[in-house]
Image (tube, rainbow, N blue to C red; front, side, top):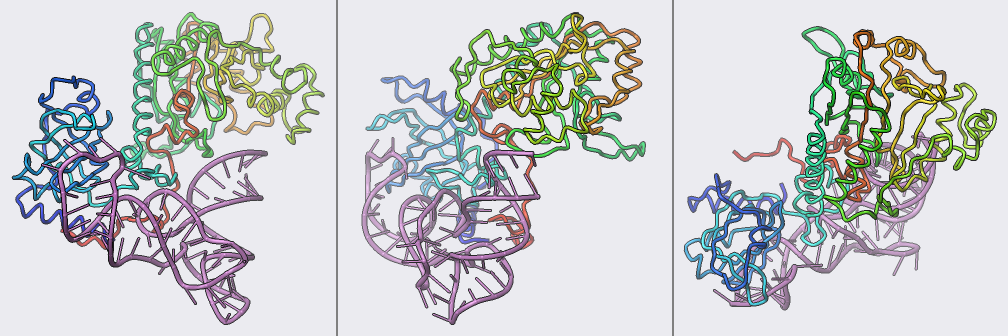
Length: 493
RNA sequence: GGGCGAUUAGCUCAGCUGGUAGAGCAGCUGACUCUUAAUCAGCGGGUCGCAGGUUCGAAUCCUGCAUCGCCCA
């Protein structure tokens, strides 16, 4: 235990000896710091105010102490004067940076114009035994920030604001969809067949039935069963799990909004996507031009709608029907195309050449049908599927189909495995019960998935997905590698 | 998997071609009833990520390992 902690423990004991519980208790009827400041009116000093929060700055002038108290809304200054707090002065002098306190007093301004609660009653809510990070720079070590988000959130106010914004955005999405008549549902996270997307699943074991289960990679096939069941407009916002790599754009568990609308198609999904995200930007951002890293994303409507094949020609310089040209391009890009089927090669080239150019929101439409076993093909040209992906800031943000509802075609698609794709990379996984469901009749439908984490990244200019997930997955800290790690040497009672 | 960079006090960071460790903040003591990263005076605080190697001598050079970040596959 380091010296700083020992000193704080000693103060804690002194406070206990005063008959005060250093870990506080109920402290009702507080007001967010920001709203106290907002309601302050010049000339109406002396109104009551009551706040609770963490001490992030402390300026001790002797018989007068100024404290900056921070809560999730913002910060407010407390003024502690020996004259007003004579009976509590011994406690006041043992307050440290990082302590949680409640304060009640009258609202006023200092000589320099700072809105201040002149405290008449100070309540210690929790004594901090570990010192806070540096007061000006906050917590900067990237790894420590993720591992100790509980410090990051109050040491770096912009982090708090970003996560509050995420929460508000998700609430807006729910409200938007509910206003359009969509009903929120919950479908299984643990599945016997990990279908609905192309990804390697996590496997777990259920002892009671002695069976292996998969954590879902997508809710798609269950949501479509609900279409069969007669639910016409449904959505789910929940976690998917994919047993794949970590990067600034990938976390193995991530949040997906998926929705289905009966009697609609992918064009309806495009309109819905555009209006949903635009309404988010209108409510939560200073659009339509939003920075994203070194990029500038122009969200002004209407968004570009471009055919997959046209983009391939534009950026890869080869026509999609000209397979030798596409394969030559693949080789030039270092893609080992020999064992891959045409559609797989095409997609490899697309990902290598097109994606990094899609900065402004762009609907990429009409994918090669072989890549889309769950999608209805275009009536005009069955080589293409009625699917779009939305890109923005060079990231894939959303994916949508005109859903395939013909059970025989679906079954045939499940049986067809593309060469060049491993089983994990393929969406084609036989699900007999899903076929049975389709045989009962699924209405034609549009389906849409939006990656919530990436959407929040884009709309809050977060450089990494770890900046929008409160507790991103990290390699476990090696033993002894963490400063201040608590271990078995704790001898306190 | 490959490349580059980082790892020094509780936190944020300096530390040159090798000569035995520094600052700011935080902490402790003292002063101060209007501060805004308060100020002033004084004091304490380090297994320089880990393990080897080179050297009279290593935070510094070399090798390996670990962790983190960025880029690439």
